[in-house]
Length: 424
Image (cartoon, rainbow, N blue to C red; front, side, top):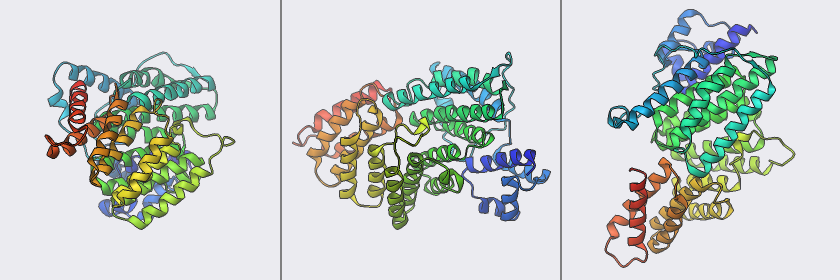
């Protein structure tokens, strides 16, 4: 296989999947055979210039992901400074649909001294990623994202523009950079900065393709599916989730990561109304997680995915399938199994979802007690998802204001105070 064709093919595939477009849909759109496009994307054939032009027109160009990363970081830092100046309406009003990514703006690489990169540098980047992942799990995506972006656009870009001890180190560094770009995207997503999140996710998929890291590509596509579902784009979410578990992305992943990919696929199937398939996917995810053990080295990016996480996502599948009783049981299981302090953001969200299910079951007093725990857990968490929970609480109790339901007025006030503290 020609190495150049393989690299270009990986970029073509990453650009298409980042946009959430299936191979069949693209083939019909640009009037090319699906099998021919598959050959180009796998690198088995060199794509002709007209095919590359079609991809560039459809997906905004196949830019060097390193240059894109540097440009993204610079633009992100400048945008956040601009927003702090009071112009949030101008820049914050638009939320792109998954796949509508404008990456056509010209970019230029940051100029710095060329570094010689070794395995210890890869370890450093991964350690930074793990540290900020832990902070994000505890405090939400609104904490520390600026620091992640600055580290990406300076230190990590310098590493990517460096020289490498060998090819293994080069691929490992691109993989580590892809994880950092994914984390920046995930933090933006969690903080309701969806356009920025989509751009980081798209760049992360290209870096992962350059690293030839199939499981990481699946991990990023899984995050994009999660975002699409949360934004109400069920069809795009299912396409992305299906892509995340396709081929080597799933088959070569470790058990814990396979479980994560499969349970989000189950969630996407459930939202799309494919309940029987969703139930089967849940069982596979349970089997995958059960096969994880301390003797199997897992990537640090899945440190958070435990029995509590699986129960939370299973509850979402059941809730979206109409099984409120089963959903309540699984949300409760998640609450009991999770280390609440280390995972305060997700713990608060789980409690919020549990309270919402209890309210739908007609037990508003129990729901208020659950919501009280959720609001206490939120504390100083800065997260779009916890804010959504607080808004949901206020909407749920609104028809009952002035009633004798125990704890309702307190819950309403606590939710309002949390949102005011968040500036929302």
